[in-house]
Each structure stands twice: as structure tokens, then as C-alpha cells.
Amino acid sequence: MRLFSTAALSLALAASAGLIAPAVAVAKDPPAAAPASAAAGPKVMASANFAKAAKPVQGLLDASDFDGALAQMPALEGLATTPDDHYFIGNFYLRAGIGKKDDAMQRKGIEAMLASGKVPQTDQARFELAAGSLAVALHDSEGARAHFTEALKAGAEPSETEALIAESYFGPAYADIKGNDFSPAAKQLAIEGLPHLRRAIDAQVAKGTPPPLNWYERGLQTAAIAMSPDAVDWAKLTLAQTDKANDWRIALRLLQENYKDMPRGTNIDLMRLMFDAKVLQNDYSYSEFLDALTKSGLPGEVKTVIDSGRASGDITGDRFADFYKVATEAIPKDKAGLAQSATSAEAAADGKPASRTADAYLSYGDNAKAAELYKLALQKGGVDTNEVNTRLGIALLRSGDTAGAKAAFGAVAHTGARGDIAELWAVWLDKKGKPASAA
View (cartoon, rainbow, N blue to C red):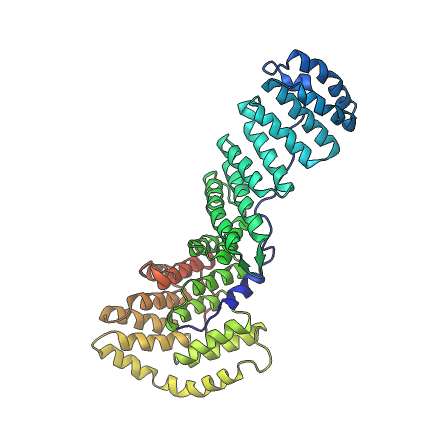
């Protein structure tokens, strides 16, 4: 069983810049407010009594006397008897709200115009989007969500509208977070918002336009904090788009959290990806990796990891000197028997000796010999083919055979922790080509 706690995922999440930034900017510009006569058009006609009383109110609005107009609005509302009249009432409130820079009044006006049923179908989406954006400004997430949903039904552009709907869930969820944990209610909101963000991404891709990276990151971070059932899918989706170290760190730590009982050997292959992606960085990660390697009898890799950490500045002073001492003392004897082990593996009845010897060669950075022995292990059989194919893929990738590595990762059954790890190695291969060798 691996050495891990949720603290590591929290550290990765906490390091993410702009964790609670909205996925998209919300523009709250309302529809243009026309004078009553222009707004009416041929299909909007106020009743006679209403029109007579509305004329002086319109005059005050035209003169920018918004307070004067508002003082007469209660009496004017009492005269509104038709949908057309109510459309004008909304228009007047909208004009006054724009003049006074009053978001609530603008929203009231737009909603009254929509409720009148006189907004042309061609303008429905624009009005709903404006009302939703004003609701966002007024911190009314539920109201915003309702308007954005109606805008979508009315034909609003789907990608940004779905992203806005997603944010109407995420906003209140992130407002109810302590540290890196959602409250139960906030977690539910976050999970409900994720499918909308995925639809936004898919719609943007369908248009032939790359979605903003922060849409992917928003989904990954939210899914990770909520531990959503589709969190690993968000990790794969996001990592295919990003080179950011912290995105990789979150995704890989998420895998560990998702598979709490991951065997040590499986976790080592995940942490090898963390090492190649250069996202170990903190003492917790190095300690976990070095502990697992030491317990698995891989002193060469222990030394390589510490040397690399010292060179990058991640490991300072005498940190991990105990691991280093044990490893360097064990290496001469360990390496001395490798050639004989390889010879014995060729004559063995099954592939287990070849696989064990390949593990040692991989740990010393002799990727060509490791790949040769992993192939022998697969040929002889009697081994965990998913484990061997994963490590064959790592050896081939580190030696520059990207096509062979892709085939090896693809041969891993796409189920469970092993399957997800192999898929992320394949994503890394596609994003980075040949990473620096572990040696």
C-alpha cells in the first residue's frame, strides 16, 4: 500500500493560482434601452390611458431626470393593463437603471420586459443573457442560472452560455469552502456544474475554436476538490491541454486519492511520471517516492531522484541523506549481479525473473536493456502484463522510442489505477515527446 495522505492533494490545490477565478468573464451590459416610441415599434402599442400618462415620464427620462421619472412610476404601473403597457414599464425601469447605474433596477426592467411576452424572439437570448449577468453582479446565482438556461433555450451561443451556467453553480460552491474542502451542499453544487462546463468545452471544440485553458483548469480543480466521480476524466482532459506543472501535480495526486489502496509498485509508476514531469518539488512528494523505491529495492533510482532534486534546488542541505547513504552503499553489490540475473532470466521457465531484472535496469537508467527484458517477460508469460507493459512504455519513452512507448501504454487494460496511469503516461508522451531520462 502506498504512503499518501489527502494533505498532498491539498498542497497541490493550494498552490494553484487563481483557484476560484471564474471560468469566463461575465459581461453585464444590458440591452439598449430605447425611448418608448422607438421601443414600441409596430408590434407594441400602449393602451390609450397608459400612453397619455407615460408621455411625461418619457420626457423626464429623455431629460435624464431619472429620479423624477421614478417618482411617477408607481402611479404609471397602476394604469398598465396590457402586455404592451408592461413592456413599456420594463423599458422605463431599464432606462432609469442605466442612467443611475443601478444593476437591480436594470434587472427589474429587463425581467418586466421579458415577462410581458413582447420581447421579439430574435432578442430573447440577448435579454436573458443580460438579465443573468445582472443577477451575477447582484450575487443571485440561482436567478442567474435560470436566465442563462432560458437564454440557451432561446438560441444563445452554447459554449459561453454553458460556461456561465457552470459558474452559477461554482460561484456559490467556492463561497462555501474551507481550506480545500467543500461543504456537503457546496460539493453537490460543484458536481452539478461540471457537466455544463464539459458541454461548454465540447461546444467550443465543435466550433473549431480552442477553449480557454482556464476552462479545463476550472473543471479539474473543481472536480478534484469535490472528488467528483468524473474527476479522473477531467484530469485526462485537462492534461492533454496544459504544460503547467501544478495542473499535472493536481491530476496525479488526484489519482492517488482516487485509488487509496494503490499497491506500492503501481504508485511508483505514477510517481515516475511525477518525476519525469518535474512536479515532485516538495519534501512530502520526494519522501513518499524515495520511501517506496527503497522498500522495493531500487537503490539506483533512489540516488538518481535525490541527485536530480539537489540539482534542481528542490532538495537542499542534508535532506534525505539517510536514503542517499543506504542507496549508495547498496548500489555496487546490486549492480554486480545484474548481468548474471539477465542471463538467468533468459533460461527461466516464466517471465518473472526477466521482469524483476528489467525493473533494476530501469532504475539505473539503462532503458534499452530494461525494454529488452520487459519484452522477454511478456514473451515468457506468467507476469502482470499491465505492470510490465506500463514499465516497458516508460523504458521505451525514456529511450526515445515514442511509437513503441505508445503501443505499450495502449496495451495496458484501461481499467483501475493501472489503466489510468498508463493513459496519463500516454498523454505525457503526446504533450512532451521525449522527456529527460531518469538517468
